[in-house]
Picture 1 (cartoon, rainbow, N blue to C red):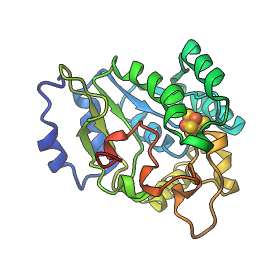
Picture 2: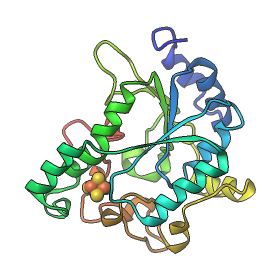
Picture 3: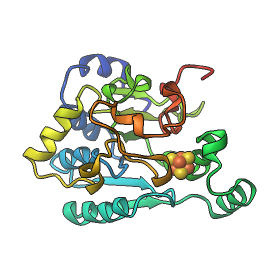
Picture 4: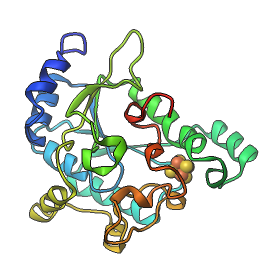
Length: 243
Ligand code: SF4
């Protein structure tokens, strides 16, 4: 199956109330050239479920150079636990050096996270996605206002090109944080030790802080910015036009 023959709109309707395993079975049954984007947080649940469905799991992660040391150790733990080939993507060295020379190491506190995320995350991700037909993400509707309408699968409006559709599967879209953690505990899935220290959504070290018990899980990300702008560009299609 290719992106030309896969009827994503019909499948999205049929699978809108199905669970992650059914959605991943559909994805792996139709695409060979598909990979999981692993952020090194709790979306290892996807790896756990997919590893029971396919023996040729492809997983990649974005190494921004600014992750917590706990996250790097966790990436290695997951690589060994599931015996997978984990592709760790780095920013382009020349682009990053020019950016840091020009703006310093903490420009995001002054003029927003978009430029730094653009260099450290989006450019490497775009390079990787150009090689795939489909990718799998851990986005959930209950994570933030920007994700409230995330479908279980969609054409990726941010990374498709005029000549080529890229499909994005979001198997955890309908799951709550409670369900994710129920799965992690029931299946002995490894998780980032930062979760035990009040971090809920984990990104780069300078842009992530723990949240209080009643705060929303992504409030600790880019806490100095507007709630509705809290996407790093990986899922830019979630943002309202013009935001
Ligand atoms: S999350 Fe922060 S440090 Fe990481 S790429 Fe984005 S702005 Fe840069």
